[in-house]
Image (cartoon, rainbow over all chains, first blue to last red; front, side):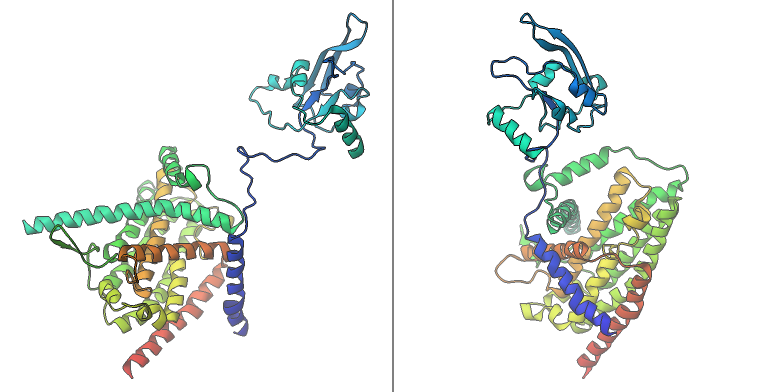
Length: 158
Length: 329
């Protein structure tokens, strides 16, 4: 009897007060398609291939990324340009195989491949998930910071 | 000629009230989602129109164009009839609710009530009980165990709470000495004459029973999403499903209107016009409904029965008795 009275006159009003308090708090909802979350610096999203300041590709097609890849998602074919430098003729990443572990990024001796912050790349066609070199080069984010500081920051994080 | 004019006026009143109520139902769903969202740190519907205000229209279009799936094992006739049986009584309640004082338009005296029955409250009690048939028949005819359980729970619950629901009104009736809702409102002029101050226990009981009568949380056992999938609604889709939903919200509005009339002085209030006062009070009750849903968890079935028969029923009887004694001596 006493417990019931305590519930009705104490516990339930406290409950109502609690929910009422929450009515005036700021909602935590993120209006996703309209507003996007700022991803963490080390977030591993869609890959991109980096270039030198003069516009030439950094990738020398050494194959370390492909051998580091636990999902076997990277395929590459090497070639030489007229100066005798190695570059990748074909460089493909199958995003359906990729597990976004970032090992390719760690393995790369030339700081050529990075995992960016892009995560919206769904498609209804499986073939569209095999990203070619041109696509990966085009994925480079519009940088505000110079390339070197990004590298230094990444080194510090890892 | 005079009778034809009367008929036309009544038709216009019926159409007006049905329109207002159905619009209210549509935006009650919006209010519920919005308010419930904010009570849980969410924002609720926000994409369709400003503050998501066009969401009910989007919902209506979606439901109207959905495919109607009728399972093989249903009792066709009853299955089809049940949503209507549930929806129609929920609208019928509004026939006796006075929305405002008499107004004069084009030389005609118009009372904003479709029919001022002298036994209005009995009518309301009769009609609100009819709503349970729709739910029970829906549960039974669906040929699904969840629906059946929902229907059975609903009938047991509504019958149990009907008693206390009716008795909680008796206190008011004793003071008002009238069954006519218009007469009851007329006796509540001035804030301190509102029956909520003279019958606080009755008001409290009425609110609990009203929530149970309309199958709302924390008494939403007939639909109990987490245990019965959706109870009697499980096998319904498209507009039939929508009819049940509209019935639920129309019932909420009806019960709020009755509470306003019986306990909060109906349209009486200072400064603002009477219709606005009435709408405001109903709105307050709707918010209370949603607030209750956001706060209290669902009762277990035996707790529900205990509360109904062992707490609310004796309290209602006691309240009636005390009121009668005070009035007599």
